[in-house]
Length: 384
Ligand code: NZQ
Ligand code: ZN
Image (cartoon, rainbow, N blue to C red; front, side, top):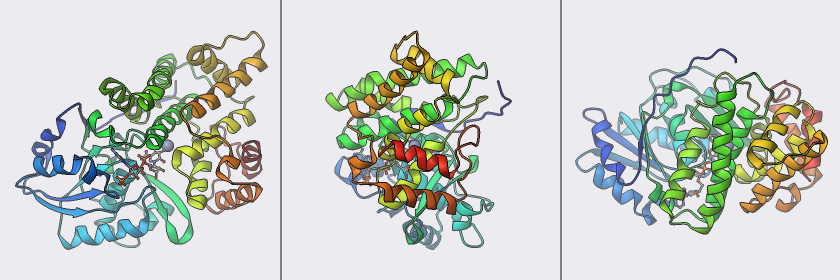
């Protein structure tokens, strides 16, 4: 096992009715920026519940954070936050809103061009504290320090990460997810699944506990994910999906093990260029990447097949191929398509993605740093 230092500061408030807990977690004399997305929270009652929990608290609203939140919109939120001198951000929404809150928090006291936080790793100090109310289980953003922001002007989707912008608390009420459109339920399950894979499907380092954690989350997503589509108001199913998605990327399962993240990095370019949903890009890239990297990942692919999909072939090559097919079939069963052509993309998209990867310095991806531009093109070619 590799060395690690692990701390997760987010207090999870899980279950029905937990919104009532938030006020006691706010700073004294709180002046709250309520950050939200395109309006789903106004239709499903979550906004009303937040506002009644915040009765008596000074609240400034900023709505309109887009899926794949943009730098352009978030800078307007920074201006609003500064105008009103807020001292706390409450992000109510999915990963995009929570990621957006982290960028606003970091940019708030930043002296200079905040985009540098994303492209140059510029350091920032004294970020605003954040609380989250999660409405879409997928990213784990409610309990990690990652933020992914897109600059529309240059089609760049970039990430930064800092424990200082990790939410102090997160409300996870499964009932808030009942209103999700099926496409977002599917996206969430696929995203969480791939988060686990990025931290699991590398090479063995004798970390059996991390492996079992990861396999447990994958199995839960495989069992509960389809039920979340067929029984949308089954509380227990929603609760199990929600907790799986948080556990998939709250840092725990990735401690002490190598990580990959190349599926995400290649996928981010597909979103930046063609506006595909984040999970759609992952469903395209991962099976092809597993195929292209099957030698480097041989041991873990076989283990995945055996322990998660119950595939037990004596022939290694067959075991590996069947496991890759099982992953692809799971995405398709979750109604997320797995080929570039399913989204009307062809060879031109491959060269555009590769050019963007080069521009962003993503030229040595994967747990071995061996996914260069040529390999990335090969992977995307397999996904046509
Ligand atoms: O904007 P509103 O109106 O709220 O609608 C949203 C949005 O259209 C809707 N939605 C959310 N909760 C709902 C709901 N509709 C009905 N009922 C509800 N309860 O769903 C749509 C998608 O929301 P979004 O927040 O964009 O989805 P998601 O949570 O999948 O977040 C995706 C973003 O997170 C980034 C992605 O790159 C992408 O930008 N990621 C963040 C990560 C992290 N912080 O660690 C890791 C991930 O790998 C990922 O990169
Ligand atoms: Zn993801």
